[in-house]
Image (cartoon, rainbow, N blue to C red; front, top):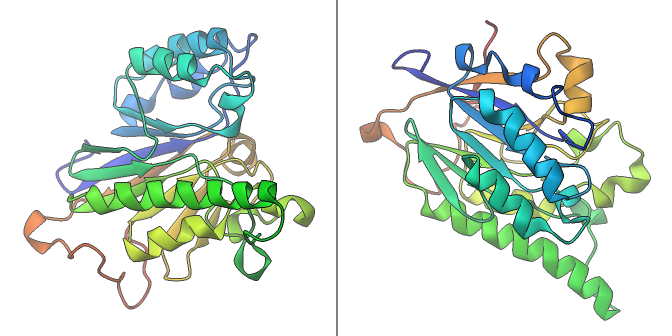
Length: 269
């Protein structure tokens, strides 16, 4: 750890590891041990959802000697072999979250893939054809899984990891026509009920790096194509999360600070 007062989180999404990725992804993470205590991967880890892609990624991640926490993206489902992909990554030491939680260094992580449906007044509603209702219910189910995970955490600090965006701000830059397929404001609801220090997601390759929920919680889009443009010198973002002593932890469900100040600061080292 960087010291006794902070935990450093490195976050990245949309690696899209494929058959030609061997030797290309590992160097991105080669110096993580010097700059982070936990690595967060926010989905689309492989490109076509193939076990062989997962095996290549597992080898590339072997250089990482800190905990790796990840969620699935939509690409992991492409070939119908997501169970095999998950098992390969878990066997390589990656903690895969799907409504589950993970705790380390006094920080609790809750993660889900999420789903689409749109944002605010433009969000798709469960009305009409059964297909539309199933689409909306998928987003609702992902939101409920996220809420269940957040409710279980009793750590001084909490972090949410998603693939789909919970707010519109971080997908802006993409064509507005595809906003409904990039995230859902239904994912924002549990984040406001169980405030977290930060939210990380990917999926929107041409989106915006930062935004906030309606209650002021910072949201970060860490899709690799976006990071290439924003942080080309290292291709991932590192954040310093203050360690909160247990005795001063806010009760679960407590609102964020009145001034809306983020409880996470970006590492500049």
